[in-house]
Length: 442
Ligand code: ADP
Ligand code: ASP
Ligand code: MG
Image (tube, rainbow, N blue to C red; front, side, top):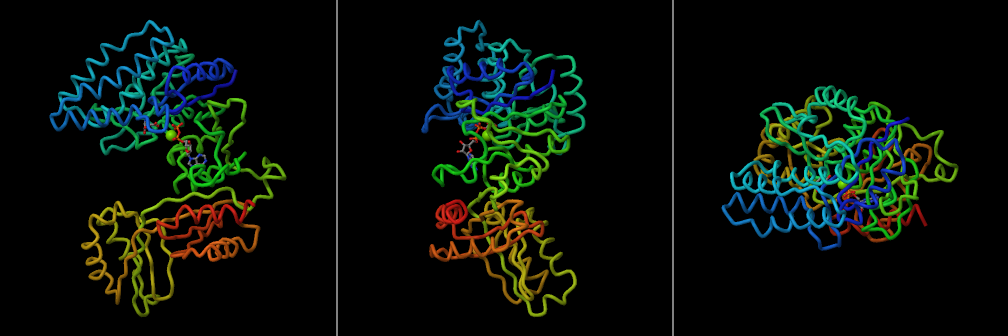
């Protein structure tokens, strides 16, 4: 018998009907032994995710407001699922404990984590699986970093002793014994960690789309589905905003060579997307025709451009620029450079807080003749292994954007030739993605 780890996202567990679909999927394959649930997500477009309700309760409790009404919405959602599925489980004691913890002003992460914790209890009961609290098996170190080795040791020992289990996603325990969460969407990471510890044959990530699409379906209508994609291509796209899978979820499984399969809970008959180490032998001829694998992007970056005569002869110029950013805790995204100019692309949310100090430090440390900052830039990544063997990919992108009257603010092509990054104004973001998609796919 093989082992599959199945992670179900928030929309896959949003109400009792979704729970029924999940049970059917789990029972259809006895290899699906370890299940990682998210908290209930949206049931309709303006619904509120349980995680967001919990953050709201936390904020209210922190400012001394009465959060009972908000919390009763959470209780009702879980109780509705429990009664519709005729489970004998009661979460009343948990609700009481969480409310008193909120009143005692426990941590924000603790509050958010209860969404997955409670949902995990319900799902374990419904499936007849053992419930393993993630706080007993997922660890963070004293610096708040995920403790990969310790977790893998403890979790794999625990799974060896447990035939079938539900392990809630999103959180673990930190060195000072408090609950800590990954960043938003982090249940995908838990799923990957469990897959590694279980030495799974496959990590299934069940969501509300039939796999990874060539572009964000909220921007491009009916984008082409991607049958198979490499870890590296996916990492480029998910880092650049294709939010289907958390960008950090790739590392635990990549190192073990465990493939990821993105699947649709609402259409389990679809094969979804396989994410693997190398595609050369696995892609169909049709798929090999595709020059690009996908397009993704994010808004709100700044381009800092430094100009200095004879910059090219100055040893250590780049290091001094990056040291200033490091000092202000700002990481850089890209570094396109010319002979006497160097640009650094940074995330606005990190840069804008210390903007004036950073610019003044950059003048002091580098003696630049001028420093120019352009904000409100969106970055778009066009990724694909096929670009390496194909001339004219960049030209095709630029011509399409020029024809659409879109001004390109920045261009950067990674040396791996796996992707081309383009900067455009935030306002041109959606239109640029549609234009690039049209140039390759129509
Ligand atoms: P879950 O709650 O299951 O974790 P997410 O909402 O995190 O699901 O991710 C799935 C969503 O990602 C889809 O509903 C879709 O709107 C969005 N998305 C963004 N980019 C893409 C893409 N390239 N392919 C497919 N879905 C995408
Ligand atoms: N429930 C958490 C969130 O909304 C984690 C997750 O869904 O993966 O971000
Ligand atoms: Mg998600």
